[in-house]
Image (tube, rainbow, N blue to C red; front, side, top):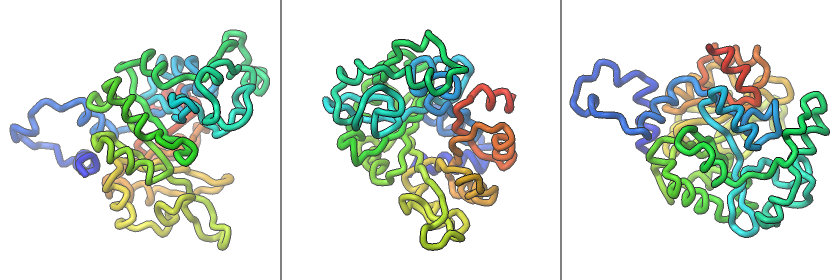
Length: 311
């Protein structure tokens, strides 16, 4: 898979000193995006969601203003086929709506209050300016930031959003986000990522993983969807299987306060051509440890903290 091969070459420094005419040719925007994955990326988790309502235009604008490398959003589909940026499968936590988001039309979702929960939950950060916050469509996000941002988009709960992959690829192509190196697509569901590549194999993919203790044996770590074994048991062959379709891994760092990956895991993934992005890291001491371990990027609700740390 050419994305993974290019990332491997860049991460191993194989372009250094090359003087062929091909190497001297102008780098395309998509190739540049893949090269950039070898360096550190600040990924604004649902925007600057530690400061303002998550997945809101205010959160995205703040993260963009601070200079985050990627605006991260979860993408779901409405009952009438529109793509919206919303994390939870159900509406209750971050709006005054009820039920599954996929059971509502866009017009119904636009009528909801997606702000009051934040002001109620975080009274010290409450702001009247958040009043009128709406659930965003992906088109609204692209129309606002266009080619001036990069986007890190998850096909969220694809089993509840049938057809989300085709709809997402259609929007990415319509807004020219692929060849211009503007987007990464992530998912915990390997099948969803493979569907994306069947539709357009130029789209760089990130395989999300979640490591936690096995219910049968708490001393053994397992991956939520079985995409890989637990980090201590992972082999080069397992990582190469992911690198066949993805350019990176997005992994948790801790589970209930205990580490589930270490520096060896990060280096092994990188040696197999995968960038490693860790989610969701808000503590600066944890940020620094992961930076010292050589991760390629961090998801954070506080991109300002991370940017200050790496400057």
